[in-house]
Amino acid sequence: MFTASALVAELLGAPAPGSPPADVVEHTAAAAAAAYWTPERMARALPLDLVTTVKRVGGLAERLVAPRAVPIRAPRPLSVDQHAIARRPAAPPGAAARTVDTVTSGSRWTGGGAVGATVGRVFLTLNGVDFVCSGTAVRSTNKDVVATAGHCVKDGTGAWANNWTFVPGYESGLQPYGNYPARRMFVAGPWARDADDSFDVGMVAVTDSGGRHLSDAVGAHAIGFNGTRGQQTYAFGFPADPPYNGDHLLYCAGRPHDDPYKKTQDQGLGCDLTAGASGGPWFSGFDAATGQGLLTSVSSFKYSNDDGSMYGPYFGDAVKQVYDTAQQS
Image (tube, rainbow, N blue to C red):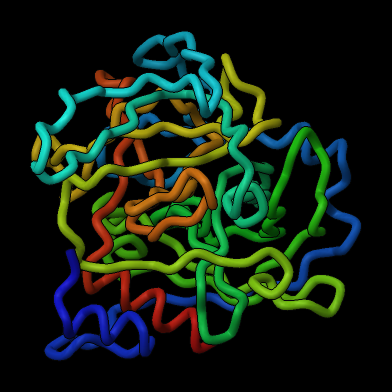
């Protein structure tokens, strides 16, 4: 549930009353060579690691060669109409209908709808190494904003990404809507200064593709702030570490919980998605028939001793400031 003032601010794209001064760090992206992301280079790009000890620092490339702290569990490959449902008893006559929560992890999305076009893969270069993440198109004044994880835009206190591009609707190497290179990148101050995982969110304003704005070409999702925690949530992404290969859109669903380790303000969701899913969208109020939902977080990290839970930052005032800045760019 959103407060009236927060909802008005969301609809108008203006800071909520009483918001603190914006703490946003931005970067103008260098123009990437049009021919940089060849199919071969995309196929070789490495998934950004999800395992964290809460504080990320530089050296992402070096961490990739270190052994994983925990094994990756096998997926539960369920289709959208076969997913596990937490069923509750039917309501007695005259009683208010009860909600039925969907609970699934690591399932391939076959339901179509808006997410099939608006969610995509992010390709980027950090410290000379090519990586992949996930992202989604969000409604914005400029029609150009992609939401993703902060570490898919800037390596914490380290370097900004270059060669950054978004491929909406990606499927098995196909780019049905083209690709959208970054023109400006935005992260919250606590992420840029301290690599604070509670603020691991990035917003990227992209260039047009084929003369069309991103949201005109593929659509976009509404974004919400300061919502009720623990709502039924669907999380999407393109995991690329085994047992996945990054070719398909996968998802998890359930009710997130607060960080039991009290290290962040994030929420955790039972989710088997692996590296490469970083930056993928979390939706509340998601309609599986239309593939539309309200964006309320993005996939950020997993604890090294808890590979079954994906954590995502809470979208509060600080994230709204990043979004407001990006949508006006």
